[in-house]
Image (cartoon, rainbow, N blue to C red; front, top):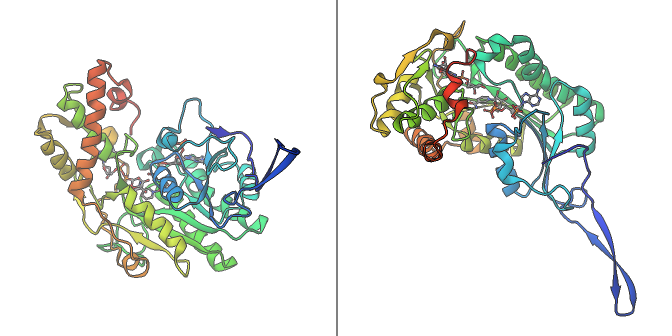
Amino acid sequence: MVSEAVPLPKAVSFAKVDGPNGPVVIVQLHLNSGHLSMSKRALITGITGQDGSYLTELLLQKDYEVFGIVRRSSSFNTQRIDHLYQDPHEPDTRLRMIYGDLNDSSSLNTILRKTQPDEIYNLGAQSHVRVSFDVPEYTGEVSGLGAVRLLEAIREIGIRPKFYQASSSELFGKALEVPQKETTPFHPRSPYACAKAYAYHITVNYRESYGLFACNGILFNHESERRGETFVSRKITRAATRIKLGLQEKLYLGNLDAQRDWGYARDYVEAMWMMLQADEPDDYVIATGETHSVREFLDEAFEYLNLDWTNHVETDERYLRPAEVDLLLGDAGKARRILGWKPTVSFKELVRIMVDHDLKLAEAESAAKTIDSTVANSASWGTI
Ligand code: NAP
Ligand code: GDD
């Protein structure tokens, strides 16, 4: 599914066919091929992640031509977008994958020069907060410096795409006010949040220095049935459904008192797109305006399955963080007023969407009588 080079879509193709009076050359204009097209081109880093997959769906629905940067992996890492696959050999393909890496400026320069995007969504990151304490330097490279590598490539090449930076509510960290909004001071509490603070500020700096249409989306936690399985929401819904079917006995977690403002990822990618369609570039908080503890997430998920989580959940201090973010609650009033954005999925609905999805996975696992060793072992691997 990934192209090795960056093939520029053909604007014109020729075919020679036999007509009644001899050979005829057919010239075909591919009106959605980019140069001749009215449709926009988007480039997405992190296209294989949770948000990247939903954003790609959204942009394809809106008739964009989408290019995604995929990093080389020894096993397949495109599961979240495989359903969107389009044959790269077809001239009218609207989704193309390109190998690259946020750690590799030269690949980013080449990709930007060849794809000439109208919009860039920088979603790529080492996005796990707990893991960032284990690989702080790497996290800084990808989640922090990755942004400036893209911004510098834009400046050097001289293109003028709109730029979206995936900023995070983790920036508020040890929050100085509740709820948090665009003007709330940052107090990052992890190497991940420090890296994202750099990316946030450099995005603002390129907007102010070079007049780039660059926006920060300060997104609060958003989850879905495509959420990585080591984030707490999905870890809970995977485990609860497996416990329900007798595939697992225990679930090991860290801090159950942490509170998060949890929304649905599909709603949140809509906000990313809206920011780049606004009249002026700006930074926006995207949140539901409700906060719930990990304990409440457990209540909701296990009760839906008629289970009592206190019989199954145990604490393992390896899942605690050296510095914790205790409470996040966002005020997305600015996004509502200026962009017209609001969330559509409640906390209860979110948990149920995820449980319903994971119950099907557990049923398939049970029917196949094979234990998914990835999930079964995840509680004992590393510290995530
Ligand atoms: P995710 O599922 O962890 O996806 C991260 C993406 O980044 C994956 O496609 C990953 O590729 C890619 N990536 C990792 N290292 C890379 C590198 N060196 N070069 C290029 N790509 C790389 O994250 P998400 O939940 O979709 O979040 C999207 C973005 O929003 C991230 O920047 C995250 O920090 C930020 N954010 C997320 C939330 C949230 O609640 N989800 C909230 C605020 C901000 P592989 O698939 O190969 O690993
Ligand atoms: N991952 C995890 N695993 N978290 C746990 C566990 C566990 O076993 N037990 C308790 N928690 C607590 C964490 O300590 C944290 O307070 C909360 O659950 C949420 O953890 P995560 O789901 O890992 O998300 P996060 O809030 O740290 O970070 C996510 O949201 C950020 C936006 O606020 C990530 O998606 C970040 O990339 C994103 O920026």
